[in-house]
Each structure stands twice: as structure tokens, then as C-alpha cells.
Length: 209
Length: 394
Ligand SMILES: C[S@@+](CC[C@H](N)C(=O)[O-])C[C@H]1O[C@@H](n2cnc3c(N)ncnc32)[C@H](O)[C@@H]1O
Image 1 (cartoon, helix red, strand yellow):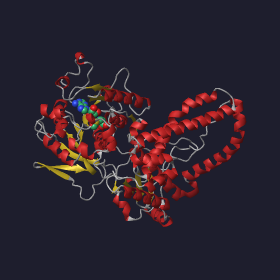
Image 2 (cartoon, rainbow over the protein chains, first blue to last red; image 1 turned 90 degrees about the vertical axis):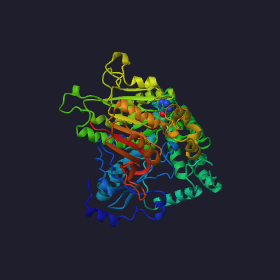
Image 3 (tube, rainbow over the protein chains, first blue to last red; image 1 turned 90 degrees about the horizontal axis):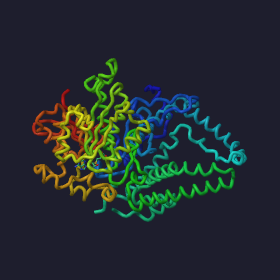
Image 4 (cartoon, rainbow over the protein chains, first blue to last red; image 1 turned 120 degrees about the vertical axis):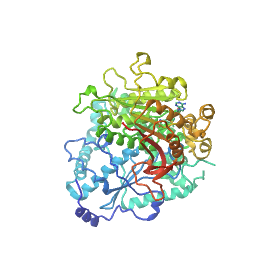
């Protein structure tokens, strides 16, 4: 799916969420153009389609419509530091949509996840009830409803078979953990880390002197 | 380190006591929440199978319920233990969980062996892209195609100071789809026996996970060995003819394609002043700081933290690689390494410095060139100066 500029303009007028807001964030998140795209053999296998009944996964927008940023430590990096922050944030330039992923401990995997989340979101906005997310959501709702029925039968079943039924309904496409911050949620998030930084006026990873 | 405000700790505690435990190491709530999530995921995935087993044996609801409660308690005890290791004792999360993702790979991590860094991952991706382009242009190793597969020779990669094996293994994973007919020959060397065995384990583990190319029948194409790269015996062994049966099955004949190293590069002062506390307390000093005796014995005219580069460039003269990537500590060290490299007997046709994130646009104030004598060497990307890249003609 490609978003034309016209569609993008329309989307933007609908969207009031997910804009990069105030400038304090510039202090610790550097927003930079980033043109490389993790595809093909580099893309982690996290986001493959599992069920064939679902609509196909939408494709992420072209790289030049994405501004990528991640927390860059102020310290020396490399061998001197072993931090675990791997969060990746994407801004879709035509719509101003902001997506963040800190689902995994791998920055390269978070980059792929964030791109997929962005693609899903844009698909949602462009196609509404027909989007993959909507279809998947509907599928899950139905499954949940039937799982209520199922659980009533569960104990009887347990006695009969002596086995516990694995409750795996929630996991449909493997990105449930991926985070997505938008609008209000994001502001709040930012406040929180500002406070954390206020706790630590110096470099986060500097050892005690 | 500044003390955490009690009100801040209390706030974390109100969310979860685990968060408060993690806070001293994580410093902010976001990171603590992330680390707690990863610890939980780790514990639930490592506890699950054993208990499933107990439950299926008898058909009884009470027994199932007891098992469920017991599992829950076990899980909580485990989570609490790991949070304490991380938060109270300050053990690196990667040692607590025993792993670090590195591209598609999952690299096992254990004390005695350096934890792979994201900056290293970034330059390996960048190098793989570059090599892929060169392969596509047909200037490197014929990757099958219309040519008879048997004529395609393997891509030869040498990784010195290989540690966990992360660099060599990720390169092989990233290049596999581009090496149809041929494959890769990888040799990694490290002086630390624990590193050598961990690298072997990482090879086997990631082969099982199917993120590494399968070796062809009967042929082991990735070999990690123990060696001190400063020893004369080892250097002499590099001259062996690969066809020589007495060379111990060595496939290391020059010229090779890719020569990479992330050697110890921190000065003694840098180690004391700007390493993270968990780095100093738990990661091996041998992996970080070149030993003082090395300089006195062989490279008296360079800074103590640069001795590995002097040696690596000597080795490069013997192996005659097409591409060299050496990780460094900062732009100043990169500049010193380039000054050594321009004195090489045979000139490099390309010299570059890559910053931490080589494919990001430079920020304001980040120089895009360094001067080495009369030469202007391009500096790519954004962040600290992180690698020296050298290339020789075909
Ligand atoms: C910075 S670590 C790099 C590990 C790994 N390549 C990585 O990037 O994560 C440096 C490695 O050099 C090894 N080393 C130190 N002195 C050595 C020597 N004289 N010969 C070979 N390896 C050495 C250490 O054991 C350590 O594993």
C-alpha cells in the first residue's frame, strides 16, 4: 500500500493524535533522517503472517516518508557501556503519525516492529473497518466470546482428560507486546522520563566518582 | 551516582515491588518496566515445560489447581531473584537472562565473555549491506547464478578477538541469502577459552534456530579457535598453504574477503573514569583494556590502548583482505588507527570512519571528514567515531 500525498493530507486533517509536540523531547531524543530499511533477509521473522484467513499484512511506507529516532546515550557508548535501551520511534512525515516500539531487547527488531505497526495504523486509517487490524480485532472478539463458553466446559473437560487447556487465545499475530504510544499517552510517557532524567542530572550510565 | 529520591522509589513500589528493586540499576521507570517485562518473559518461558509435565500425569482438578498455584509461586520467586541480581547487585541484564539478541541471532552471554553491543550490531549491518552490493556487482566471490555452483568459491571471513562470536555469526546470517551456490568460511580467534567455547555454542544454537546457513555435507565452515594474536606461532600459522594437509584442515589461505575485529580498546584511565559500573564489576577486563605488557614487548611507539590495531594491521598484510572493519573507541582513536594504516606497505584504495549509526544523517556539529596527513578521510553517519573501514582493490 502506498499513501499518496493527497490521501496523506486527508489523513492528517482527520488525525489529531501522535504529533511530536513540545521541544523538551529534543533534549534526549534526536530526530534524524534514517534511510535504511530492514527488509528481506535482515528482517526478523517476528511479523510473518500466521493465519491464511487474515488479510495480508500491509507494507510499511517508503523509507523517505519516515523519520526515525532512538535514544542516544550521552555517554561514550561502545565497550564502555552495556545499556539495554533499544526503543525505536518512527514519525510518518506525511501524516505526523508517531509510533514507538520497545517490545524487544533488539534495536534492529524494534525497527522492524515499529515499521509494521506504522503500516497497520496507516492501513486502519485508510481503510477503516476493512483494514487488517479491524478484521483481526473482530476475529479476536469472536474468539473471546466463544472462550467464555469454553471456560464453562473447562473443568468438566479437565476431569475427563486430566490435562489443562492452554489458554492461547490472546496471541494472534505475535506483536501483542509491541507498544504504540500516541497522543495523550505519549505526553504522559514523556513527562515520566523527564522526571527520571531530573533524578539523574548527569549521564545515566556514568559510574560513581 | 546521585541517589534516587525516596518519593520516586515509592512511586515505583506502588506499581510493583519488582520495579523498585530494579530502579537502582535502571535509573528510570521506563527502563525498569521494560527490564521487568523481559525478566518475566524469560522466567515464564523457562519454567513452562517442566510443570506441564507434572500436570498431565493425573486426572484431578485439585492437583491441577495446586500445580497452577505452585507454578505461580515458583515464577514469582524466580522473578524476584532475577530482579535482585539485576537491581541490587547490578549484574548486567544480559548475564541475568543469559542472552542478547543481535540482529536475527540470539547470542548467549556468560561472565568471562563480553556482551555484544548495539554499536557493533549497527556496523555489522552496514558492512553486510556494503558487501551485498559488491557481490551484486559481481566483484566478489561468485554467488552461483548462471555459473556452475562448484566454481563459486566460499566467502572467507576472519574475526579476531571474536568473543561470543557475534560479529562473524551475524555476518554469515546476513550474507547467506546472497551466497546461493557458494557459502562462507569463517575463522574466529580469541585468547579466552570461555569465549571460544561460548562462540561454538552460539554457532550450534543459532544453527538450530535456523538463522545461520547450514554447512554443506561433512564440512564445518565456521571454526572458533583459541589463539593469542600476539603470539609468533599463531602468526606463522597464517602463512600455511590451505591445501597443505599438515596445516590442520586450515582453510585460511590469503587473500581473504573480510577481516573484522572488535579488539580491547579502552585506556586504563578511560576504564577507571568512564566505563559503566556494571561493565567494570561484571565484564572481563581482558576484553576491554589492552594489557600493558603488550606495548612494552612489541609496539613501544604507540599508545597503550592502540596496540591491538598495530598488530591487526600487521595481520592484515598477511591475510590481504578486501575489506577491513576495526571497531574503535572514538574519533581520536580512529584517527590514530588511520595514521597507522596510511603507512601500510600496500595502499588501501578506500579509507573511511563510520560513526555509531553509519546510515543516519550526521547531526549539526558532527564532522564529515578527518584529515590524515594530506588526505581527507570521509566520516559517515552519526554518533561517536566507531569503526575504521579499509578497502583494497579486487
Ligand atoms: C571487546 S571484546 C570483543 C568480543 C566480540 N568480538 C564482540 O564484539 O562482542 C575483545 C575480545 O578480545 C579477546 N582478547 C584479548 N586479548 C587477546 C589476544 N591477545 N588474542 C586474542 N584475543 C584476545 C578477549 O578475550 C575478548 O573476547
